[in-house]
Structures are given as C-alpha cells and as structure tokens.
Image (cartoon, rainbow, N blue to C red; front, side):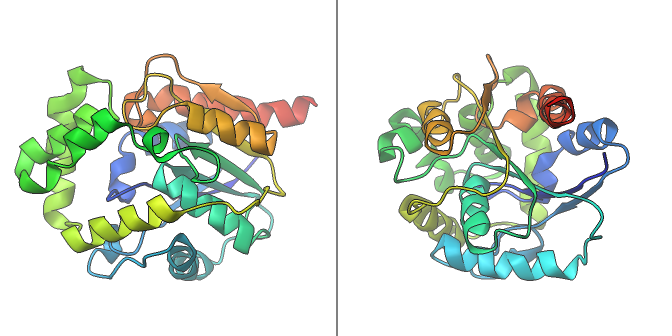
Length: 254
C-alpha cells in the first residue's frame, strides 16, 4: 500500500529532529511519500510568532498542508509526537477529512491527564534550566529528559546543536508553545479515523498513563516500547517504523 505521510514534531523541535527515523520510514514504506510540516515559530518558520492556542497553530500549519497538493489516490497518514500529537488531535477535530490514519507518539491531553502526569516534576526541574544553557550543554540537557539512549547523547547533541544554530526557536516562542500545550483539551473529540497510539513506560518526560488514558477514551490500540524514552523515534527508529507497518498490515488481514 502507498501512503502520503505528514509528520509533525513536538515542543521546540522541527523536521530535522526526525533524524534517522525518516530513513527507516522510507525503507519500511518504499512506495510512499513523506512531508514534514513545521510548527509556526520552529524549523523553516522559526522567524514566525507561535500562536497561543493549538487551534490557531493548526490553522497556520494547514496552509502548508494544502500547498502540498497531495495525490487523491493515496491515503494520508498524520504522524505526530508530543506537542505534535496535540496539534494532530485538534487537526482531526477541525478538518476531519484531511487524513485517513493517524499515529500519535507519547502525547497527552488536559482533559484526560493532570498536569503533573503531562510533564513530570523531575523533567520540569531539568528543563526549566534549559534557557540558561548554551550550545551542546543545552541540547544534552534536553536529551537527558527526552531520550534514554545515553550511548547516543554525544552524537545526537551535536546534531541537534547544528539544527538549533541554523534555526533557533526564540524564548518567547518556546513559552508560547508551552502555553498552547498546557491549555490544550480535546473537548470530547473522538477521531473518525483509525488511530494508533505509541507510548513508553520509561518516558522521563510524560507519564505513559497519558497515552493509556487517550487509548481508553478513544477505544484505540496502544503499543508500548519497553525501554525507549519520550523521543521514541530517536531512541528506536526501526522499532517505531516496523510497529507502524505492522499496524497497517493488521487492516489487510482483518
């Protein structure tokens, strides 16, 4: 089956942060197409001002989506992580016909989980110091929260630093993204398309109960990685791509 994948990253992240996962996804789905859409205030839009609500963020991102002019003969798959998962939920609510499938990774919604589950206090204590740090030290601090692959910290911190140096997310936009994320609730929305939730019990940033709560509310399947952290596609890109492939395979068998 051929798909059109749309990928959305999370808080202060951008398309380049998908890293080697993009290669795994292309290898797993060789006949599909892949497009990343950056959040306003990050990536190619780093000079823009991030809206203070997920609803307004979606409205701006959808302009990029429409400009892609995706073919009508391929199912469109929305794949999003963390804050991107909140954007995905709002998108599915506001424009339900844009996508045929969605994969949401380590995300959380305010109407299903309390704030201390959506951002663990230990993670907050580490992340609150990030604006005072610079260069590799800043990126390593973020990795220590979102990734469990300490053997990759040096390599990934250098890669992420190069991204940040080229397209820095401003402190005001960081705060605006946090405000939008904190306020977000689904307001009773239940997706009209198949949704797969991926979670991580060893996530140091967001409690896996947030994923489980969404799965229960939406009656959607949730698959958990036993050792990976919040940034699942960084910690185990191959597992993530293969798990998504297996989910799609289940439709052809049913």
